[in-house]
Length: 216
Image (cartoon, one colour):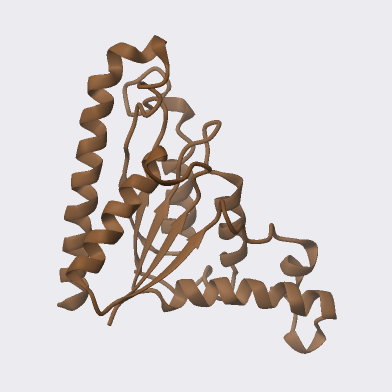
């Protein structure tokens, strides 16, 4: 049976978070279509992984037999996260935009799982694993919009997930999520609602397609 690695990083709980609402729709459909499958869940806002340290970093380039106690402990945590990624048949990531980029908790997870010579480099160990990223944002940074050049979420995650880790990356982008709370954006509420509905539908559609793809 297939295993889904589900990672959320939004600061906000439940339906108050646009990214969580969409990842939840994806996961529910995945489980409905694949009831015998496993889900590994990490909520990086509730239980953040350690930011990478000098010990954790240097241990990745040293013979394990030479590790100091500090390096051994730090590297063991990295290996645990790496093995979760390697064992997953599919990955689901909630990546809201905060100050034009991803949450620091998600960056910490990435810094831990990117290990040259294992997950990155000539033969990435999770190569080809499908990854669905829910990249929510308060405004719009789509091509042709005034803030297009400030889009550092999809660009960065494409570089890291697709180029460095050789994963098969797909994005769902709920946008204008601040419209209901910001009076200055009130005229954009219908566009927000349309974007949210489209994202929820995409989540269900992509989850079903992925289950079928993995079962083939």
